[in-house]
Amino acid sequence: MALAWLVYRLTGSAALLGITAFCGLIPQLLVGPLAGAWIDKHDKKKWLVGVQSLMAVQAFVLAGLCWMDMIGTGFIVLMALILGTLSSFDAPLRQSLIGSFVGSRHDLPNALALNAMLFNAGRFIGPPIAGLLLGLTSEAFCFAINGFSFLALIVAILLVRGQPPLRAQGSVGQVFKEGVVFAWRTWVVRMLIITLIALNLTASAYAVLLPVFARDVFAGDATTLGWLWGAAGCGAFASTVFLAMRKSASAVMSAVVAGVAISAVSLLLFSLATWLPLALCAMVGLGFGISVCNVGINMLLQTAAPEALRGRIVSFFTSARFGFDALGGLLAGFVAAGFGAGQTLFVEGCVLLVFVSFLITRRQRLQKQISVAGAMIDGRDN
Image 1 (tube, helix red, strand yellow):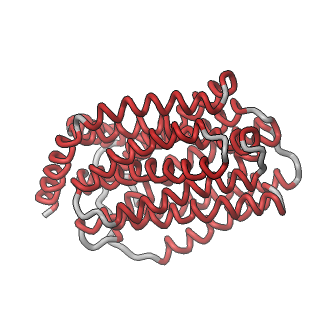
Image 2 (image 1 turned 120 degrees about the vertical axis):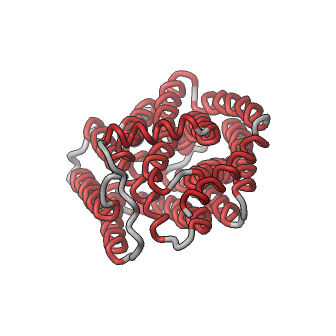
Image 3 (image 1 turned 135 degrees about the horizontal axis):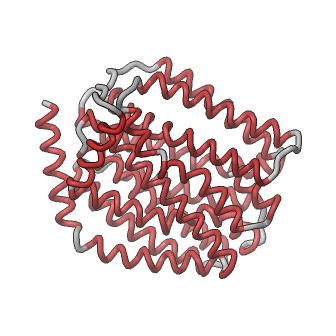
């Protein structure tokens, strides 16, 4: 949040917001799939500690240069690109390690939902606090807090115990090809990734344009931005509580379809809102719908993936999730610069609504095949 506000405060450019978001996420699309193959061949816990250490360094450098007023837009874009590259390894490392901390495979979907619940609790609580801190202190102070948060996570990783995941054999190229063949030939996996792409190319682009809405539509400041992001985090937190209570893969699949529909309707409502309370309600719905879809698909993909392929399948998930979020944000930033933020999100909402109708016609087949795929994997693992 501090990075987005810093960019818009310095430049007032919606296009540069899109560029910064793009650079922070596009490595997930380009590097992520190969990172998954590399991850499956190495000690995940050791490398997660290393990646977290580098992310802490990035945050402290950003804080120091911002505090000394030596930061420009070019350097902000560079730091976003570095963070995105590190995140290409961080996200699949964290997600694929969860299975090694869970005793039974049947508990994995619930563990993933609880993990997402904690993550989204941070998204709910963090932005309003960030808005307050930005008003009272500076972006540099927020970057420094971010750096210290990585140190806390490194300690937690070193303390936790679990069964080390199996390592893949062969070259990185062979391991990568094996994952691609599995994802492409498994229809339900392919459809879930297509759904991720459609959602994050459209609905997730709202995040890039929030500073524009906060300052120009609602005549607010960083505190207003914090409330908007916090409302989305509130909806996302509620979605993970909802998903944690889903007892079957079929029920999670139904929730994913509903999440895409809720995202489309909420995006349309937010794009037309000029009254802040209505916009906050739309943001709750948008956060709920996007999170139900993203977290639910992560649960389903890991349920359908063999243990030996989990790092690669998770990397495909993060690649589609964040890579197309980056492309969508870049596109939204440039379109909004020419036609306005509200009009941009309205068109994206209409596009997503068309995809919802396509997805509904395949819902029953998806429910059936995800149940079959999970049963087959359980049989192989046993």
